[in-house]
Image (tube, rainbow, N blue to C red):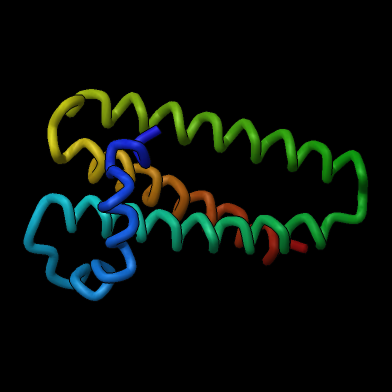
Length: 119
């Protein structure tokens, strides 16, 4: 949903902008960098989620994990849309949205890592 707000030309510039993420000077760069941070966190989340799934030996537990993860993703997305909606129309809205996604995704990674540690 927010990806459309970045615009195609901005998304194409992501590769070039990554170098500027240590010191973003414009709101557009901040938005792109926040998106890139989220993409990295989401990739890590998918890795750890797959690791948890591999550790489960019971089909019932695996199905429960899948249901929980899908519900969590729905919650995360709805929650971050709600938070970012307070900034609707503002240039900071994508930054708020992607920062929220990143924060919640990093929390979920920690929870899943605890599951791996307990197997």
